[in-house]
Amino acid sequence: MRKVTCTTILPAPAEKVWSLVQRPETLLFVSRPILTVTPVHGPFPEIWREGDYEVSLRFLGILPIGRQHVVIVHQPGGQGLYRIRDAGHGGIATTWDHLITIEAMGEKTRYTDEVTLDAGWLTPLVALFARGFYAHRQRRWRTLLSRG
Image (cartoon, rainbow, N blue to C red):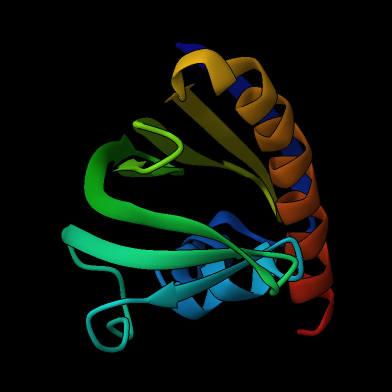
């Protein structure tokens, strides 16, 4: 098992970031172009509901890298604190437990991706990928928020 944590400050209030985190279309946007995420059993809901969503993954939109289960679990928050967890698992990563934490900082937001993962002997490589992937996602978050 490895844990990877990536934090950034986003130029938007926590409530706005939280409303976007709850939308599957945000996942699709922030993951591109590194990962293309396609639901296997019908379309995603408009807003994440607790449950298990099987997805197909493609690296750079071309190379199939298998299927993964996105398992949404809402987490308790507090005043100015929001959390959502993907207790995911799949072919390469038998554990992909991803916690998103959103913390209000006035008109800005501290956004943290924390993933605990296990991919057997590939764990060090998958952890290296995760570090780069979450840094990419956080850059894409800034792009998304700059669009208004």
